[in-house]
Length: 152
Image (tube, rainbow, N blue to C red):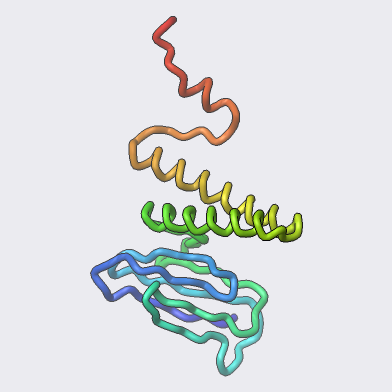
């Protein structure tokens, strides 16, 4: 099982991108992650690229990979993502959705873009609710649970 460790020795949040899947895993200063793949050991299981948007760890042959923190806890896609990054991802997803719809792309591509946009919109709403210290209910009952009950 190939593994590689990545440590953030900067004073800033740093994004570790897991490619080719494009999942983002945000590292606080001093944090260390381990990327683990299934499969056999090979000479070059990973390539690491440092760029303006963070660090990309390219998995060369495995069909899946996971990221873990220093304590062995899974750090899933979006782990510790700053709210500003979520806002930017949402703006980009909105542009993509508009492009896919106006260019007459296939229904499958339109649905993928819509689902991606809606997922990010929900993530931003949850992040903003956490930031404001408010609970956020994700189902249709939220308007009832969060309504003003001053009339009672």
